[in-house]
Length: 123
Image 1 (cartoon, rainbow, N blue to C red):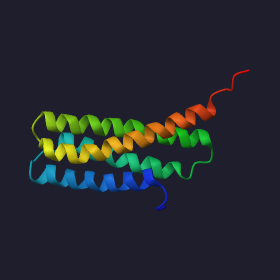
Image 2: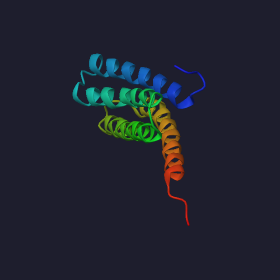
Image 3: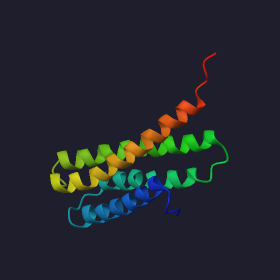
């Protein structure tokens, strides 16, 4: 992994936190359904960003980054549902959700930049 790629590094660290949260939810809380959904989308963010690094075109790069953004939004949803249903505490939620929000901001900025670069120039 490249150390200079902030979104790649943050998404990897976030995936590690998601795996740890999944382990906690399944062992300490006996929660399996929502935690499995969270594991899938929370680790998929970094996987898609990592795949984007080897894209053969800017269009493919943008598609992978957009998928990562969608996965981050889904992750945010499952985290909100876990705290709203009392499975995780507000403190636990605040900590991991702050990381999710940072990744969302980075991915949103990247997708906006990509869209502006691909928009047709005015005549």
